[in-house]
Amino acid sequence: MIQDQPKPEFFSKLLGLALIGEHNTDQAIAEYRKAIELDPRNALIHIVLGDVLSDQGKTDDAIAEYRKAIELAPRDAAPHSSLGAALSDQGKTDDAIAEYRKAIELAPRDAAPHSSLGAALNDQHKTDEAIAEYNAAIRLDPKNAYPVPWLYLARARSGAQIAAAELETNGKKLKQPGWPYPVVQLFLGRRTPEATLALAISILGNGACCGATVRRPWWR
Image (cartoon, rainbow, N blue to C red; front, side, top):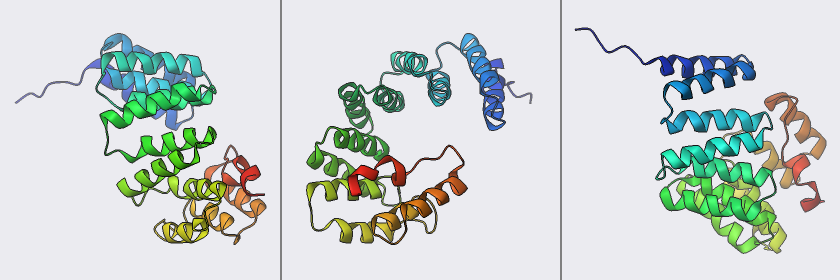
């Protein structure tokens, strides 16, 4: 029996992924745009293109792709989360929070938008609300490393005495010595900021940033 052949846009998507792996993002963007021309109703391609544009710092273009994805797939949580991140990058925190809340409404069992919402609320100094979201993320996905150090920072900001003990407990659930466990060690006073940053660069590359740099004012 002859099987159906993949549609042309499928190959453009695959080529786009391959080009990203080769760090040829401009050509990858061209391939994703070609895939959209061939399959304009495919929300996923718009999301992926938005992610690539966002990584290039083309936030306005990324936002346009995420909004198109939402138009095409209004019940999908993913483009709302991505749109929230892009809006947050532009400093539009209230709008970002609205998108994260919509993502949670559409996918209440997904931990990721809870983490993102927690970060946005933390930036607005809504510490108790941020703590609730980080706890929700950890409860939904105990092995998710991302919210663990940020929950500690929120606790510490609020003056909670349990912050360090809670970080110690949650940190034991993380993959060691994988990232971001070194940040946990940093916050517990077992690693210097300089050593943590050097390790971040060795693990994540020269463009890396971590709690050692992004949140220094919170714990110095």
